[in-house]
Every structure is written in structure tokens, then in C-alpha cells.
Amino acid sequence: MPEQSGTGGTRIIRSRTIWERIKSWPMDRINRFEEDFNTKDWDEWSQASSWFAAIGLNTLSIVLRIGHWFDGPKYDPILNPFRSSLAVWLSFCEWTLFSLSMVNAIYVYLSTKNYHLFEHRLNDRPKSNNVQMQEVGEPIPAWAERYPGKFFYPLLQVIFEHPGFDPNSECVWVITMWCPSSFCLDLFCYYSPAQVLILNYLTGENYFYLLPAAVIIGIQLKVLVKLYQSLIKDRQIIFDEVYNEYTEKFVNPNCFVHKYEVGIQTDVNRPWDKININPRLKQKQKSKKEIMDKNI
Image (cartoon, rainbow, N blue to C red; front, side, top):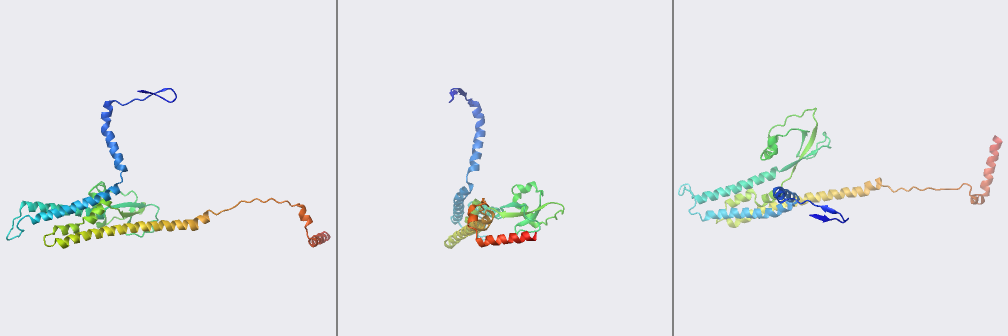
């Protein structure tokens, strides 16, 4: 529909047809979902959802273990060598949860990121155990960039001896930094393999001291992780403050020195100089002039 513009003319706006809207609707929804996905604060969401995931998995492990109490006669290789189908399924679910916990623990330990120190001197090794020299442009196998090769490739580099570097090639220091996701790290604290094993051996006679032990392990791991994260943040804050104080007290005062450009104008034939001149000084100047004339 044409609309009246502010200058008195008409502005024609072409609206899309219904068929064009129907065709573009799936792509529009995908683009909107992608924008929402990229703008979402995933760290906060991971920390919030890790609590529910850990509580749900622990509750499921306890429920599965309680199911064994109502299974009937206890398994015995001589007196009761056969297990019921319920006991088999319960054991299968328990070991599946244990495998899930182990996979999460392995992911937490092997989740790293590589950073190249291009400006660092090659003859000066960085003071870190996680640094190694790597050729610039060294080819990485395609399978090492995908799962599960992303986890096994660092292990293969450690196990097998790395070939020598070409002396004519350009090398760079590469530091490997441990960088697990907050969701997996919290899940490891609250649902570690040690806790799952404790819950798998839970019975009606030992639950009153095994359950507190599992809870204490989870709290201990979480407190340790929190303290270490706060230690890293505090160190960074102290480093920034020391650098800022050094810059403000020593660098800026020497780099930005206040200087003044002052121009002075004087008159050599000022009358008050002739009036206020000392008579003795005038006589000395006259005698010096006479001596110089005689010498000439």
C-alpha cells in the first residue's frame, strides 16, 4: 500500500506475498534460533542446569540401588545362582550411569585449548609443563579435529615419540591450557566415578555412612574447585593492580613530563639601568676601556 511521506510525496512499500513468507519461514526460524543460541549466556545456564543434572543422576542411582532391596533372595553363586530379569536390568542401568560418569571425568581431564606464543623467543622456554615446540603449519590429521579423535590425539602424541623438527622450518611455542566446561566440571564434582561406585555398593545395612561419604566427596570437590577458581581470579586482579600502580607511579610521570614554553622579552636600553648603575662599577669599566685603548 502506498504511504504518504513527510515531504508530501508517496512512498511505495512492496510487501511479500504469502507464498514467499511460507517459503522463507523455515530459514527465518533457523536464523532466529541461531541468533538466540549465540547470544545466550551459556556459562550461567550450564551452572544452573548442572545442579539439576547432578541431583537427578544421584537420585536415579539411589533408586536403582533401592530396587535391589526388593528383588527377592540375594544372589549367591551356590545357593541362588540365577538372577532375575529385574536385577539384570538394574545392574545394567547402574553400570551405564557409571560409564557416563567415567566419560564425563575423562572429558574434564582432557578438555584443553592450545595457544600459540608467536612473539616468544625460541631459545627461552616458557616456565610451564604444558608447553611444547611445534612447527608452524604442522599438519594435524582430520580425525584429530573431531570426536573422539580430539581426545585420543593428545595421548598418542605423549605416548609415541615426536619426530625431530626440520632445522629449516619455522617453529613456535604452543601452550596447552586446561579449559573444561562449567557444566561438565560441576557434574564431575557432584557425580564423580568415586561417588557412583559408593552408591552402587549401597545396601540397607551401610547406607547411613555411605550416603554421607558420597555427599562429603561431592562437597569437597566443589569447594576445592571454587577455591582454585577464586585463586586464579585473585592473582589476575593483583597482577593488574601491580601493573597499574607501576604505570601510574613510574611510567606515566617519566613519559608525560609537564613542560612549559615561556618567552621573555627584554629591552637592553632601559633608562632605569643607566640611572641605577653603581658609580664604582662605572669607573672600573671606564678604566678598563682606557687600558685597552692604550694597548691598541
